[in-house]
Structure formats: C-alpha cells, structure tokens
Image (tube, rainbow, N blue to C red; front, side, top):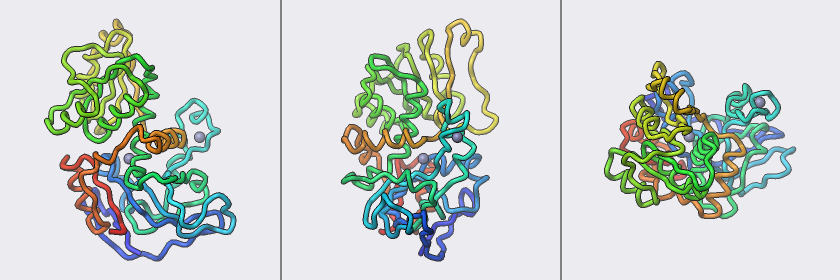
Length: 323
Ligand SMILES: [Zn+2]
Ligand SMILES: [Zn+2]
C-alpha cells in the first residue's frame, strides 16, 4: 500500500509500505478521508515528530478485525481517534485528558495520510460508527472536537457573548458550534474578506468595539491575543487556540488583567468525550462543515495539500487516498 511520508515539515515522499495486519485486538481500516490540520504545518509543532506519516483527522472503513474484537464489523465506516487518555490519572481526573501522559503514546500505524491503517487495541474502543454520516463531514470530528473542548474551557453559557479572532476553518467551526450551543452573540475579527464573509454567513457579526464575555483566539501571533484581551468585558475569559510559536510572549498588561479579573486559558487537542460530542453535532446536522472543504486531494498530492495549508490558501484540504 502507499503512504505519504513527511521527511521534514516541507518534504513529503510517497512510498510503498507493507500492508498492515490486524493483531488480535486490532482493526485495519482503509482511509476514506483525512483532513490537513493547521498543526500539521506548524514547524515547531510537527518537526519533532518527523520523519513519520502524519494526518490525524481520520475516517476509515473497516477492512479486517482481530479475533478478539467484538464490537466492530468489516465494512463499517468509522471516525478514528489517534490518541486516547488513560482516564484515571490526576490530569485525566482534573479534565485535562489531552495532557495525560498516555495520550500521545498511542497512535494509528502509520498515520492518516496512507491508504490503509492499523488501529492498535487501545484505540479500537474509540472507533465511532458514522451511521450514515458523510465521510467528508465526519473527517471534521477531531477538529470540531478540538473547538468544542475550547468552548468548554471558556465555560460559555447560553446567553453569553463570544468573540472569535480569526475565521480560518477552526474559527468558522467555532462560530457554527457556538450557535449550535445557543451562545447569544458571536462576533468575529478577520482581516480577509472571503473568510469574513463566510463567518457572517454562519451568523457571526463583525466585531467593532463591543465587550464580550469570552474570546477564542484562532489566529496565531501575539496581536490576535492582544485583540482578544482588549475586547473582554470585566471578568471575561480568553482561550488560546491556534498553536503559538515557541517564545511568543503573552501580550497582556498584567495590571489590566488584575483590575479587570481577566482569565487566560489554552486548549490543546480533543479527548474522546469531545470527539463524541462533535460526532453527535455532525450526525444531527447542527454543524455542516462540508462547505469549509476547499481542496479534495488524492494521496499523491498530500504534500501539495500541506503546502497550500501552510500558505493559507485553503480553508480545509482533505486527502482522500481512494481518489
Ligand atoms: Zn487536527
Ligand atoms: Zn490519564
């Protein structure tokens, strides 16, 4: 089978690999779709993992199940989570499942940008059937789960207001999810006209100088964080979502933070509960992410998908290895 191996953050090589084989507690899937994530092209974030086959926003069709796998059948289409927390350690119990020491030790083999993958035993329990959901929409289960987790970190209640800074695919998903969760007013700051238009079409309003209860920073760089902080009402909360470069200072006046009791959170990744919540929203049709897909690419164009994402020329590129 073929896989797209990332040698460096900018260098991808299509290579032939041995067919994956399911061990007793494992499953082998054909990859139907795998989204390209902004984190896949963040050099500081991805370089330390390379060389490897990346891609973690995976939807597959079950091709083989091991002798001990009871709950999955050949032919079933599933969302594949790439990491799973232990659920028992102190970090898990405090709600930081994505920071669990066990979280990143599990992964699919070799990665989502491949024709077929082996799902190890510890991830098999997290395979979620699509139940008729379109695979392209289902490939947003992980990114939408990340956004839901960030909204949870902001502890947004219905009737409160949210500012989304940056209307790339994460920002747009956040706007759609906030509406699905009955956030009363959703504002957006986005310099690019096309993206702003999409945000407005999803029901966000263009932000001027309104004060908000919460802000989600979906654009990288200190400027976006400063803009978010400036828009917070007293007692407001911001959440850093886009991956900042190492060394990025927090551009806040701590005196202002103190006198206005501002809170700063960050949100990393998505745990199983977040991905389940995302699949429920997708299945119910309360968030339809398909209009965000600007590029559907065959496996051989994985490198191009990463490059276009790096240059900000996609909203969402999805690799479909069957193409
Ligand atoms: Zn992702
Ligand atoms: Zn844990």
